[in-house]
Amino acid sequence: MQNKRLKQAGVAVLVGAVAFFSLGQTSTNRIVTATKFVLVDDSGQTRGNFEMDQGRPTITLNSKEGRSVVMLNGSDSGAVLFVSSPDNTETASIVVGGSLTSINARTPSGSFAANAAAGVGGPNIFVADNDSYSSVLGRSIRVNSKTGQKEQSPTAALTMFDHDKKVIWSAP
Image (tube, rainbow, N blue to C red; front, side, top):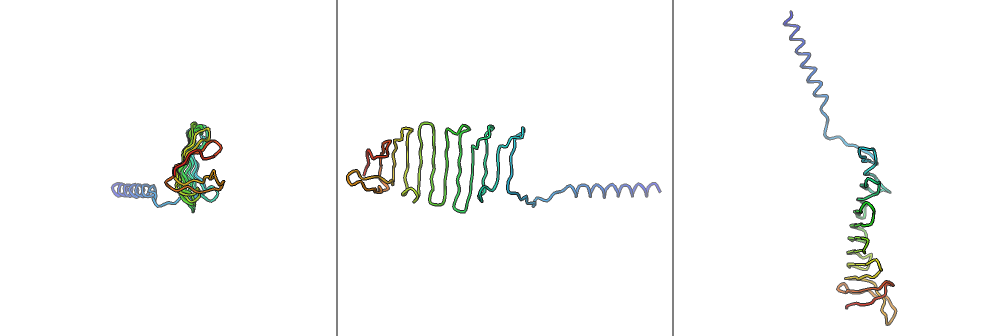
């Protein structure tokens, strides 16, 4: 009799253990649906977001001061990646799609842009300092000093502008 009860108890424990472990298994095919996910640090401060922003999927990462330092934004026409120093004195961006494809950078001493787009007259590399002097390698819109008419430079042109955006040198 004791042997029969021991066997029954053993079977009950075995069935209970199997049930316990099988209920603890989770499916890896679960889908989480939301319009926003918020990443917080140990102190509860928001350090990032993954959300729909004006109909565009956007990932934003913040500095500990709460400033956006990385943003990735997608849309039907392309994508933008923006990165910044925590104090926003240095920035860089990559824009792909639509009428503009470009790489841009800004520092306290000046800015740089490489564009391959119809939106800026065609492919060019633009460099400027903080005194507003600039140079463009590639297509740019410049005013003919003799006729006063606007003309587009060829892709192989180098044009230098003064702080008033007047041409100070160009070739060809």
